[in-house]
Structure formats: C-alpha cells, structure tokens
Length: 186
Ligand code: FES
Image (cartoon, rainbow, N blue to C red; front, side):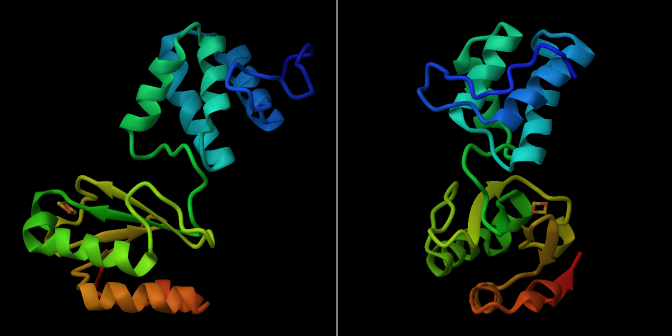
C-alpha cells in the first residue's frame, strides 16, 4: 500500500466522514492498477464485498480518485443489483422477476415476502434481519418461481412456503435456510 495514505478519516462534500477502510481499499487498488474509468466496477465490487454496502461518501471518494462525476458512480451503483447503498440484512433476499418466475406467480410471491418481512424492495428491515431486492433471472428458470437468499437458490417457492421461511428465520431458526421450503433447492 502507499506510504502516503491518509490514515485518518477524510471529509467529503457529502458531509459524512469517509470510512478509513474504504479509503485504504480505494487508494490501494488505484496504486496497484492505475486509475481511470475502467477501474470503476472492479473497485465497486471490492468495496461491496469488504464493506457490505457503498455509502454516498464512498461513491464520492471513488469518483474523486477516478476523475469521474459523483453522479456517474451513483448511476453504476444503482444500476447493478449486486451493489447496495445501505447495509444488507442478515438474510438478503433476491426475488426473481424474470419471465419464467413472473409467469409462475413471482409477483404474488414478492408481495408475500414484502408483507411478511415488512419491507419494500431495496429496503432492510429495522431489526437488520431481512433485505430485499428484485433481480431478473438467477439461472434457475426450471424451478420458477425462484428466490435466492444469501446466494442460495430456493426454487418452486410458494407464498405459503416463503411466509413460513421468513417466520422461522425471524424466530431464530437458523436451519430454516438449509431446508427446502419450495421443494426445489437449486
Ligand atoms: S426467470 Fe427466474 S430464474 Fe430465470
């Protein structure tokens, strides 16, 4: 890593102090691979993996270091479902609304998940247990409707099974995510 890294927190125009880990990750990456627009997505992947989300002040610092506008970085973060701008829940749900899942009742399944988890798409529950995103095809079309939780796919998930899964997880049943609530575990 660079010997001239600023070890303290930096302020950004956003007003929030920049997370030191984020700053070190960004500076280290740029030192090793150079800078420029082509590094934007690799850096964002790294930040998402290490930090769990990409805060506005982090976006701003990335933009500054790569010579981009903050709005350009914002656009990429909001476009790709892999990136989030808020901490994800312990159980991160990705509801597929690709064609196969949509025609197999995906919309109703999504509504059930929203209702049971008490969150809308893009939100994290207040207790930090659940977060929800909509994605377009997770490669399990033969098991539609499908939902991924922390990367694990649950196929042929009915609204009743989804409700049961969320209730079990909320009650602390960590094995709930290991079972086959939809009967089709991919
Ligand atoms: S459309 Fe849902 S997994 Fe392909």
